[in-house]
Length: 294
Length: 282
Image 1 (spheres, rainbow over the protein chains, first blue to last red):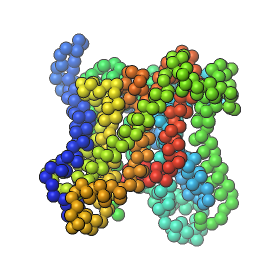
Image 2: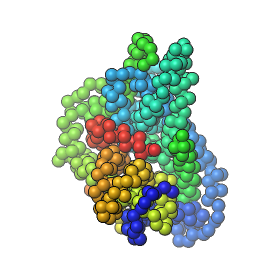
Image 3: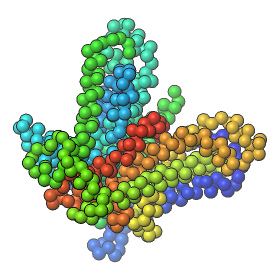
């Protein structure tokens, strides 16, 4: 790993400098994670007095549990929905902002601020707009002949949380797409224009392929966001309902473990989630390494 | 712009204006709701123009009447959020910059292990280790305290990486010159590294401030006394407390109050914010 050519010589100073970060990491990150892994192999008796070591029984039970499988499918639907919706919209906005000249900064300012809105607040905003009795969107949908109700209809609830989560993420993707678009060399698009390619053709044959590293990076970031950072949106709105239709994995861990106090199975869910984050992080950093080598 | 196409220009602006309208609309509606009285939503149609209860609603949440109607002490929740956000941002930056300094400017046994330990924090978000972390905090007696709100979330791999990347771009000659002039490591850190990192620190501060302000699950777990509630978790309680017949005007007032400070930070410091956001991910 890289350091400077010449370094300072001190036996103890670097350890002092690293101590605060490492102590916090060990106490609040590594130790609890190790506990979760250990806990996932145990089963507690009904009175909470004795733990027995049960190997992979908790995991086996999870795999056979229809609620858990449902949660996997819900998470997948939710993540793909959020990723596609927010990336699609932000790419569209980024392309547009990249075309305008004078008002670029103005539009950018108006598009980036939702990044700062807390996910819980974003959830409540859309919860209000979609509220079946007073919300404006069900009111409009009613005239179109659709009876919207996220309290009973699973699909409606899913659409609501996807929109709330995507709304907040558009600004983030937008900034990265703008940065990506600005690094596409002008000479290429100009050459294509001279050869007679129209704007749409130029976009799909030149700009979009050149954007693929950004797109890939954002896809990973968005899936991570949808899987882990959207807990507040679910908690502030549907709380996993109706009938588990928005019970994503992170929410289920919380509901089973913290609310239901079902320790072993909840810990096993935690460990599976950790493996997912590890996998996503590796993919993300692989991409960055590749990019650095250019 | 390669060629001039008036229709496409028109379409571009149209898409952007529609996009912005969609992005702004939920917040506009929340603002409208926050200026309306409690009974004005019953008719089934949401009003689209401001009402005259602006002062009432904000006064109810912020003012002396805040204990009325089962609502929460918003002023102190806003204060707690501010304390938490500032302490989290300062804490993250402080411990990250010294770790990055140690990793880049020293060679010592265990350096690579330390780096990987810091890296691991990226892979262990709070959501996947809720119960055991809660237990650690409970055992340490940190429930319902500012230290409990702040300390467990200030380890930061992203900030450490950012400073490490930045330090690696600082010319070797800087440090050699400082050493020739007889400066020790800490003198070099204070007088050269810190001033050079000023822009990075500012950009990071904005990102981390927003991160700290918007924390939800963590304060929800470890605070049970209203005096430690933060505003973002508070609005959810507000919505839940009033669930019987939700007083949307007050809930939306709360949402506006919770969202306004970080949004203002982004709008007024857009340049630094964009820099911070783009660089922490690299």
